Length: 180
Image 1: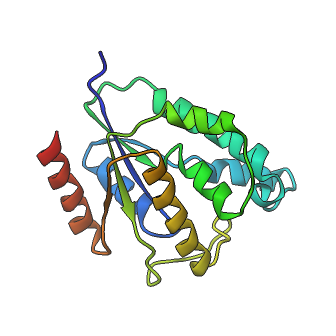
Image 2: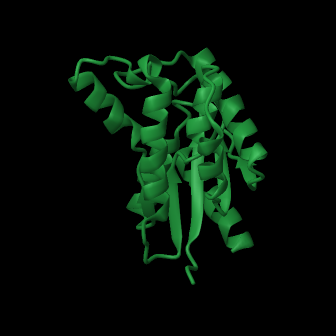
Image 3: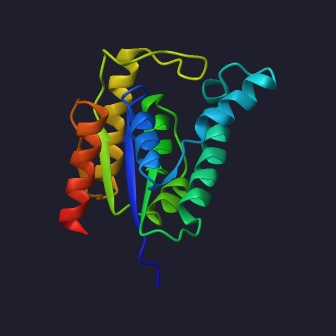
């Protein structure tokens, strides 16, 4: 029996997820990094500047499988933090209004995070870069789709309001101590 607690940190682009994951890692927590950047960079190197927008369904199916593999990886620490989750894939497809088959939903139903921390959009820290092409306004819409998708899959979600990295981490860890 696996006693790992799988904890997701998600939210729209540029809301501070990776900064929190990096800080948790510095504190010696087991963290799984976001993998979409490597797929996007690979696409760019192969001449496809915005692979998600050009082939959203194929890209999302590949990303979903990679995230499922990441979720199913064997861990030896009791807490595992994830930078973005399996279900985010469907939220992004919903955001761009791309239809997907029931197979993707079935795969997502098999994945359950013990708790999902969602970071709201934060204009002051938002930056576009070579992999983050969404505008801040689009980031807000993606955030709303993320909330909807985790609600659809009936997962325990907590909004982690804008604050310093230190205070956000302390709130997350405090909440985890209360429930685990």
